[in-house]
Length: 421
Image (cartoon, rainbow, N blue to C red; front, top):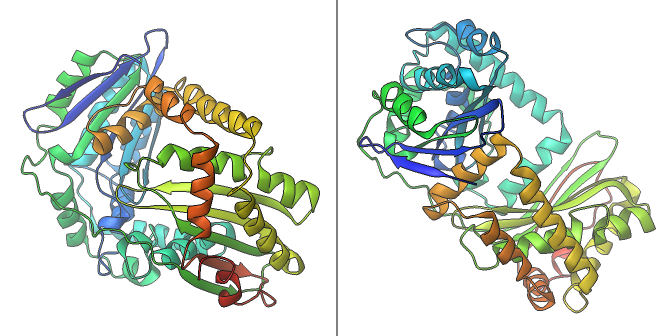
């Protein structure tokens, strides 16, 4: 990676990572604001704003926005997470100026016309309804809410029918004015790009961004845990388990990553081999590590039959407990190799490089090199894996969220008693 970073006088950060052998480029703007910055009154506004950015500007209609990029074979999209909102394009190298002009236009001159606002409100309400009908999506909202009750980080990214239904156009303008100042945005490009040309385009295209830094910080996250059971007429039982994890700045961040690989990150993991291959208790089971700026959540998901649910949970907990005393060198080596490969393979994609840069700059104030991350991953040993497993087993209030065919699911007290009392 040959990253160049320029901070404009306005405060906007421009970062590029050229890949001269390519004929394409990825370019995007990452805003340091997501769902955890919201209140109960404007829940879902980050996601609503992401949708509205494509619905017309002073210079382009909503159709012209997408046709302008797609007519040159490009791709335009956006997403909202709990800590960031991203707007990005993938184009041929000659169309990078068009991509930057389009992105700057939607982020500085969106009009949020009333008719478009109402139309998109309807679209988002349908998206919320679709999520409610998809247990594999809905269960993760339940997990987040249960692990972080009554906290912004525990609320659904999409918002609720009530909050989105009541969202006012003026709130969208206010939210953008509060959070989309130049110092909170990162323009990142990779692939067939030239740094100086990107900087010049940024200075011109983003000149209308507010330059006053608002210094808006989210309410600190605090894992609490608990249970949430919803019996519904689904064919399967969907269950998630959650435990206190680590933040992106924690010394054990890479331990958590390697632990998750060993425990439930692949077909060779302990969960897959013991729960699915050996016992046939489910089709899908895996673990994951969600790391935030100030906290984290280690989680497990499985979809299974009602008759297998309790046994699956017991076996899963048993596998965590085994890792407190028994970690093999071969599985550490395999997990480290998988983590390294995930990093290095990802860096073959211009968009993945943009994501890498856009996540590192706000977190660390710089971009960590692949060698730095590989060194951290390779430093994980059996002792650190065992201590991480012990940390999970010492959880005083673990989280369980279950949905679907769960009438026979054992009580939360029975579940929690298998951990620290």
